[in-house]
Length: 418
Ligand SMILES: [Zn+2]
Image 1 (cartoon, rainbow, N blue to C red):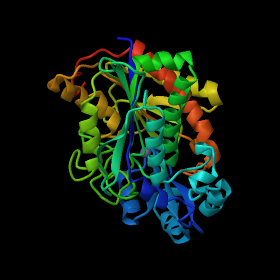
Image 2: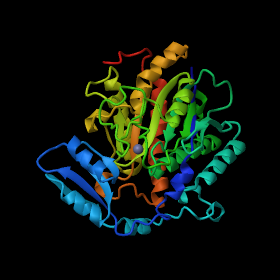
Image 3: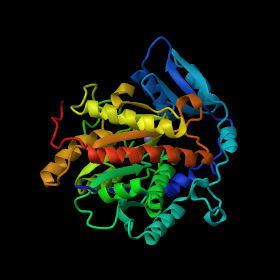
């Protein structure tokens, strides 16, 4: 009754993520531009088709604009699209990367502060196993729940206080289902580390929480930039809205619902967990707190509770760091089907009921981390922001977990079309 645990999931693909780090890839002469329609508030399917035809690297898609990485020739090609305007977001990617001083190759031993830089996958996994050994009373041995398309293990860890955890409520956290969103991986590590150190320092709030909750966390990485968009591949209203059957699109939904092995592994692990009261999927960028639905403009039966919780997350972040995150329905941004939050909130509940696994409907959120769009950095977040981003999200997630534990949503299935 008075229990939570964090199930923390760590998965792989991060090696290829690391090799895709900007320090090893040069972006000389490249820019990030914003493409929007003149005289319209929508990026039409026609434009999407043309952009896909150009085989470009789309960094962000919003209802009314796209962020795209281009070289000079590609920028010119975009400028020729009828009715579209091109604006510069990042004038020189390489200069920004250099200024942000990514240094993923520094051997870990040279740096005492784990959060002073982005880490390689192998180092991260060693760190996780070491944390589990050092804090075996509250951190479970990492277990592999499956493999990524690149054959890397998806690791899951649990953090909870000693004692019988079977009745404790659960918080599920995952990161890095998209490549390049490095800050989401480091943030999950930061949250994990803070829970462990808070408990060990005897912080009463964290002790109370870990006696109530099991935190499941997972490090799930999609190392490939091109390929199935793992946040369009979940079996909920799959392939309906704002997802694409074109493999060249950043929002390619895959050949079938749950076709990707990462999604299959995450689904199987999630459904086994009873009493998940909250689930968080970390992404970048834009500083948004997003909740169901994505597939429809309709509001869910728990919309008021979601709205309240989302605002509390935003308020906590603001109090911690002064950063403004906006809480909204996914569909307020754009319709998107097959995303994980909708699956957690709907089909996962249905699957658990069928399997006789008890639990309420979860508070299912996606959080887009730093930077804000107005900062014009795209995915490029320097290592000096790892710690502040971790702090603001940790602060918000402690509050979120307490709230979700104390005031869980009701149980029971909602009509899939409501
Ligand atoms: Zn993402």
